[in-house]
Length: 456
Image (cartoon, rainbow, N blue to C red):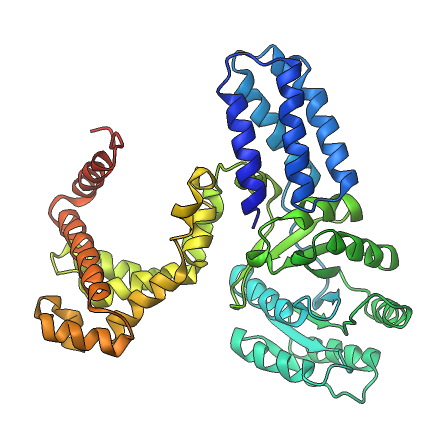
């Protein structure tokens, strides 16, 4: 998400940061580029106009012009204004109600609403330790109820059955009774979607809202529809007292215009971003972190949270203990590390959160993809258990067999083994010298790549 916008904005702002002195002329010139970048990212025109005016007023004022480091001061202004447009701070769900707290989820057909209900159930049960029950009031889409039942089983949420012939309000009331009987903390209600906003749809969801009186009414919208996402969200916010928006398919949206437009157009906060099909592919929306990501500064806090929530702590602890005892890092360990990388959103997701990545040449970034990681996992999986434990056994004929089994070339197997050797050396360095030994090893590697290494 934000790839094209991040490239344009970070390059423009960094050029200004490198100047010792800013003038009104070069600020105006740069803001023209920022304006074009925002419009190309499909940000709504009123949002662009308001954002540029506020940045210009602050940039040409004393805050920037009188600063000792005007370039850095301007970056802060741009970051602050981007954050303000998206809502300043994370707006969490308000579940402080007598259980069950009811969450009503609305949206158009195809926006990923039912999948989002399951992701939200998992998020609340894993991160908030809530007992969650879900129900589908979509009596029009034939597979909607079955889909939600399957997803509920996958994420460990309770499920209240419903049938296509029933009235949505009757389904919802039965679900509330079931949630009370089972002492659930949260009931999430999935509603029917349409291909477009229509009067029948709005009447039905208004009736549901009146009957349920939910503590949260969330609108799910496909971020890839750009300005249409903001306009559709506005139509729903005028019909319903929405408490927030969830943007889906953000992993496929390189422009990011919806994220910058929705809050401004609807007056409702974006509460979550959905990025991918996996049940854990839902992350809280932090406007300040997204603003730094757009400006190419990365999002280290979200990266740390990903590591905490999406990696297997037990596996990590076992690997650390194994290495500390001087046992050899083997191919099974390498495969575990690669799989955990994919669980954290893959290489592209990790890179987006690392500072400075947006300034890398496009030909470098294009080489970083999950296909290569999956290919490496396939190669390791094609080895025998003994070969994975003892990679030294992999002679020429064995490597050829592994290549055939994984649908790759012997050269790719050789390249993987070379990468394994480098990782194994680093791990053995850690075993011999502890953290200091590992830092020295990494420092040497950085110096070899033209860096300065770590301070000794």
